[in-house]
Length: 406
Figure 1: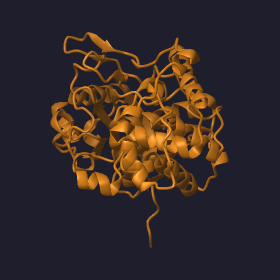
Figure 2: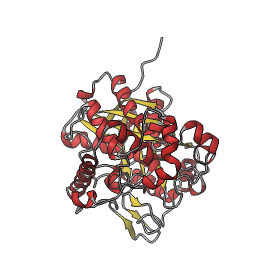
Figure 3: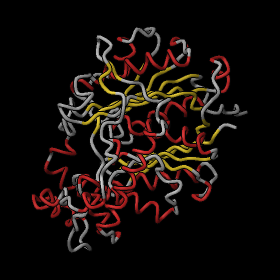
Figure 4: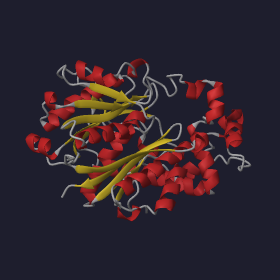
């Protein structure tokens, strides 16, 4: 006889603010290891968690080299003073890593192999730059050519071209996400989750998402030049067109204002059974109803997140119309325009508190941040179902469906 599966719940989460990915960014002086350590401390303080009850820790990280190498999850636990008996693993699904970390933790809980897990992600691209691992997907000319490994911005412009997007609608999306993020911060919607990052002497280094531009206007966005035209001219357009012979040209429509801003940041979440929640005296935030990971054409790589959303919704026994809250990583405005069109996600339920164009994309952490934000918005809006999803390099995407706990 097959044993009944446990339900997996999101019990709590904390995140850092997202700092600009520059040497002058608010988190640039903080190592990714210390970002995680500060969150582990905060998670214990806020929940009363006894660390030795945790069965495993799973962290997502896209750039696992240098300061983010050598299994950062395990290193963070050891340096944070957690018991040596608590294991840890670091996973890489590129930008979807944080989603996969939470989904992996939930799967272990549902299967009965764990009762209490910590999952999340971290990325400090000011200290470990994008492509720093020098993997063959970026550096081996034969691999790049055979796979069609174009830059993410070129992939976004390919989708914009194929979808017939106009520059104006992309700029309007960029303005909307900035306005929504500014309003959400002004109304304190992130206050409960965000842990200010401090220096060793206790000085607060950053307490808010640093990229948000509350005063940006549509005219300012319209005045920006295309962000990836020069990159296209350098050979990237030709590479994409060799793989997509039906296209005659690529229209470069995305700008800095309609592209995700690179960020430093981290997030950790507590995932467990209802029994563990009761032991901790915690009311679960949401049930993790389903998850899915999908692959897509690497040249159109950023479409994989949309595919994963459709799969996860179907696995939860739902239709897109049943989903009340959508937290979708803004991997360029055209991808957001497309999924809204295709799945019928109206503006009233799609990234209602802004997204990564406005607040920043910390690769390995973004997925976990979106899952927590989805649960928060379900509670705030008294809604039932939500989905969080991220697209990543090489045509990978992951999604998680949450159900509010009454």
